[in-house]
Image (cartoon, rainbow, N blue to C red):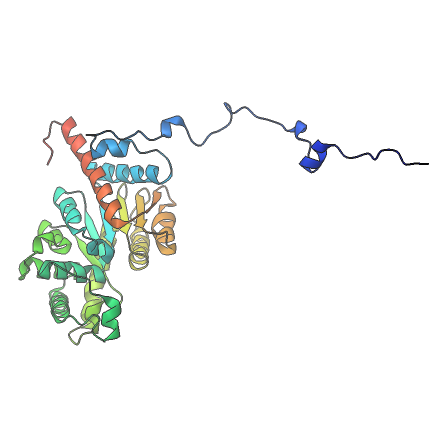
Length: 337
């Protein structure tokens, strides 16, 4: 007898691998929670719109939402007379942003500054010569890296005098630029802070900065002046409740120093819980993420991470807070500066 026709599986069963989609349970899109709303979308820029409208037109999502939140927190702290502490690495100076910080200092938008030792090197050289930043690769090859005599002599002498006078490193270097023969002292961040009576602290690790290699470097003076600045910073951090702190481009030194200053301030009984901590860098780094954004804000604060080039993001942040201040002034009938 011949065999009958073979039975085959249905096409639907074969194509779905045995999954019966007719049994799928659906939910209502209208009743489902949605993370993105039409109200969060961007508003297209129009010719003639100012920076304030540009920022207001950004979407309220992800990085754009964080940028606006950072500006709002800074603006609220400034308007409320709260502490705004701005920490920065040397890269901020090297990409031409010192005039932006000087302008913010003169406007009263910043309560205090903290930087690392390299920040002083580039701030002083720009104030002295109008230029800075050597070619490290080529000068390292021939043994001349970091051997600029004028830079080392002025920094080491200023630090030694500051140690004798009981000053912190930020104040003694700022004083050197402010009172010395510096053609471009008006664009110096450190000198401007001293001129305006705004605290500026410098936090060094021995051996990290070029002037430490020179015979005029005094380890005891470096340690004494930087430690005084740690105590000054702790005093600033103790007033941070309701304020804002920025860490711009420091991957290790400033996040570590800030965390210890915060621990000391809290140990001494200061309430430092509800504040906004903002980290800005090209990439997310471990220490800034943990020691600025996450751990310090666990008691009711807010941590914000912004990613981007300093030379774009810092002027954008500054423009946003200046526009917010001008808007407050218009409401009070004050002429903008």
